[in-house]
Amino acid sequence: MIFCKKCGSMMMPKQEKKRKIFICQCGETVEDATVTFTEEGNKEIENVEVADEPNVNPLIDAVCPKCKHGRAHYWTIQMRGADEPESRFFKCEKCGHTWREK
Image 1: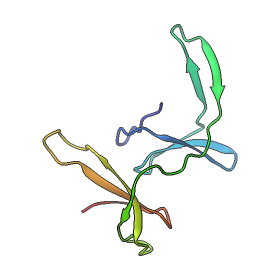
Image 2: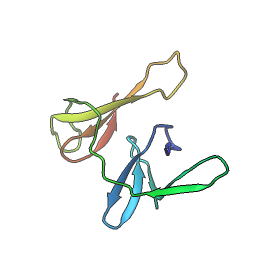
Image 3: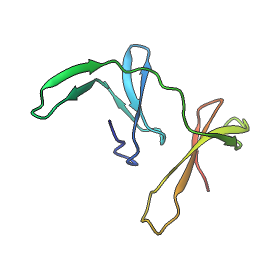
């Protein structure tokens, strides 16, 4: 697993043209995503191809500020201390624009 250095969320694998990347819900990406599984002692077991994963976040009614489409995937991230509310992010179903709830 690869975790985002920007927000700490688990990054999802994606293949764009001939390059493999990991992409985070916050928009951060990691390129040249070659995944290798290892055991204790760093013995290589197997290389795994990165496949495109569909967006698994729930869809809700939310208006995209960029294209005005009315549906978006959403997720929450604990950005501050545990006593603060989570931040909610949205990704437009149509154009892919990502924004944060105000």
